[in-house]
Image (cartoon, rainbow, N blue to C red):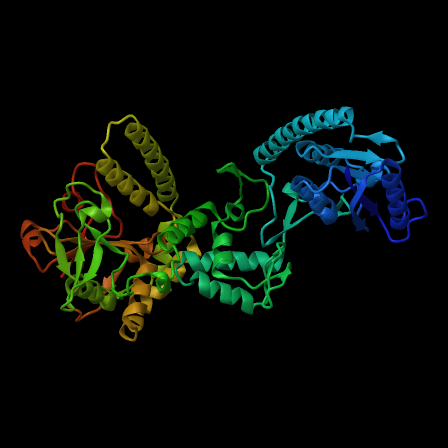
Length: 553
């Protein structure tokens, strides 16, 4: 019989009979008396057996891992309280020993789980441990669900907040009197910083990289509790600099909008929110459109296109591709294989990049706002009827998405038609957001400086300006061979509805339905402050009929 000893004391100054040396001596005496082979000693000092986690006792954990290697047959302890004083740890550890047919012997209590009867009893304890563990997990899940239903936070507390409680030696100590709603409260400086993060990103004036740099420059650091490699490769825990990934984690967290998340569902929280739900949804849409993939990881050489990621087919509403041919000519192309939209009328059509790029550039250089743009935009945003309409329309579109998904599951739609309608509804949902006041103000300030910024910008910088402002540029590559609509981001929509053009620019915005002659003019460009699309009519057809396009001469 191969035996190992597990020796543990809670402190270095234990009295005789509990010290490591005393426990070791008794172990060696037992091995000699029974004729067992001394296979080694596991010594653990300064670790409490009250611990609720095996992970907090590294030597104990190592012993349990070694039990599966077949290097020993029995573990010897001085007393059972040296092994564990926590019922959960006791049952879990005995279950592990039973799985590997390893016995346990206590010298003081004269308990021997190394005999056949003892091993059987150990296996019975292991079964009880499994039942106890599963039962405990069930209760934990119930408790977590109840906390979520009550609107209380689960897991770690995010940057910007702090718990009203602290933990020490397994005890919870209340720090705030009285306790704040939800058991958490704001940290003023961090809360202001979080609001600024969302404001800058929602207004299009900040990227995750620039926001990380700003936070780090202000002296903020993450609340890292995991052991990660430092500059020398050592595993350390503690505050770290913010990165693109940590900023995206903040921007994706619904806790800041007053929600708690449990099992993939958002539930209203009782804590104080830092931002509005509308601003949070705006940021989610923008994050979805900017996955943050580095061009350095692409196998294909990166090329700059003014409308890359913005160009859409006006017939099916799906994304178009940007391509450069060997002769250097560049095109935007509708490709069925790239969007799965089925038999689009513009299937395989293309348009030289110079045409839509030039049309959009002319608009960007000519657009201006009236002197009272801010008052008019704020009045439009805060109009109660408009806010109620947008919220009601969002509910309807979400319900249509649900019904579409159910119809697809029932086999009522082919794949291509389902993807087309799903994309159309998701695009409509993206525009149904009432922007925050400060986001609209920031958008207006950008538009007032747009001609100046555009003239001095490189092609990538111009592309960045457009991606801040627009959700899509719709191009007809079949009949009109031009841009037929432009869809602004929600924060720019109210401001652009009152836009005019500079005198002498040669561009005029007309907010009325174009005549038949206008529709047939190949040099005519149209744009809209929003985008509507029916399920049967093409975007161009319905836009002309309803007069949602504004003519740009």
